[in-house]
Structures are given as structure tokens and as C-alpha cells.
Image (cartoon, rainbow, N blue to C red):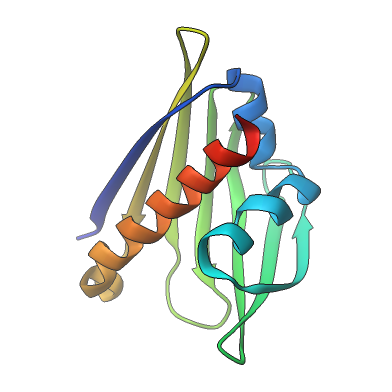
Length: 141
């Protein structure tokens, strides 16, 4: 049985800006890893279409880690669904980002379904996604 992790955040930006920031290579490079984990970004590849894939290769503590996934749903500016995993390491998680207008900005809720073999990492994963979403808010607000 998968473990569900949910993170919500308010943004002082339009839903379209929040949505686009997840799919634009240059924007992802500004907030996804550098602000949150001090990783060295080696490459970012994004094929932003249903069935398209992404690869975010970083160096962390001298080790190369390739975060990879496939886009399953893209409904601008409301919803993005993708798989998320580390290349060569077990089953990926399924991540959904739901974005709604809220006042003068947007509210985004990220829901990650973690496979059973990663359940022990649920708290660490929640903290990681929380930092990433907060870095996005700082970058686009």
C-alpha cells in the first residue's frame, strides 16, 4: 500500500506562473535544488508533454543523483501529474500538483504517493517537498 504525502502552499502569483515554473527548464534550475539542498545541478532536461520525460541530474555530497520521471497529466494551469524517482532505484512515486486561484494568487497542493518500499522515508520526503515548494514560492513571488 502506498503512503500519501500532502503539502500545500499559498503563492503570491497567478496559477499560470506556478504551473509554468514546474515545466520550464530555466525556472526549475533556479528553485528545484539549489535553494533547498545546495546541490550542484549538472543538467536539467524537460520534455513537457504527456508521455514526455524529465531528468534532473545533480551532484550531492560528491554523488551524482538523477531524479527522473514521466509526465502523466498536464492541464494548464490546474494540474500536473508525473512519476518521480531516482534512476535505477526501485519504483517511482506518483506526484500530483493541483493549482487553484486563491485571492490575488494561487494555492497549490502537492500529493505524492510513495511506493511501500520507500515508506520509511515518508517524513524525509514530506520535508523535502515542503522545502522545494517553499523555494518555488520564494522564486516566483
